[in-house]
Image (cartoon, rainbow, N blue to C red):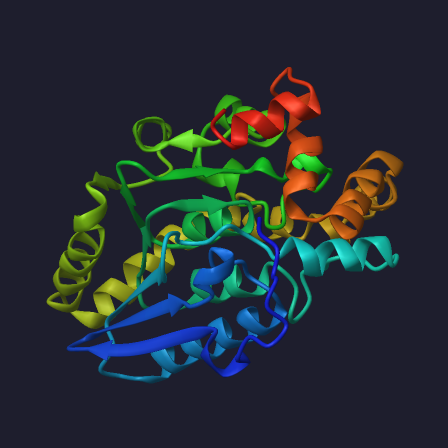
Length: 293
């Protein structure tokens, strides 16, 4: 997850849309904050995927990120302010899961082209896509447990096995490309320079196939997961059995103390204090490790 340090960022350019032959390329365009996803970015992603759905010439969609990363996840500056003010995330319109569901419901296959990082909400965004191509030096993971967040969108248990899902969600480690492939999190691992080429190769192959059959086969696979409770699991915040636990997680003092460090001391101090105990270091040792000393 990342912090937005640029209040003057032009909101009209947060997501780029490009039509190429019979497929579209949707690019998260906040490179200065590693493509952290805030509410404005969510709105523009929704519009981009809607445009792709409504264009009959489009047979597939590629989702990627500008600059050094696919995405560092949800914009922690925005979400921490919400938690500290007493508000909570939801899966309603504008909430963290709305783009994931849009991808899930899209009649056209979506290919995630991952380089750099895909963390937290972005990890789940790649998981929601029908294919994921990952750079061999990229890192992914659900690290948000380190600062007291639950999964923004509960995709992980449907992508990997039970033991792997608990490993990912309870440890908060970052996962390299080799392990991501072995876990079944991604379809292909290639050198970073070849990520888009491989994603476009998949898109072109999909575009060459009978359109209605592609749509049907995606819907059939999705249906099998929905019959096993996929949508109910995603909407865990609305489950009465989880209401108290969810509320407690949002009001946890330890979580709020960590987020106050972000608000008062900045992103670097927050990361150092958040991860020091996790790595078995003092705060100063964590700072030196990050600085490569």
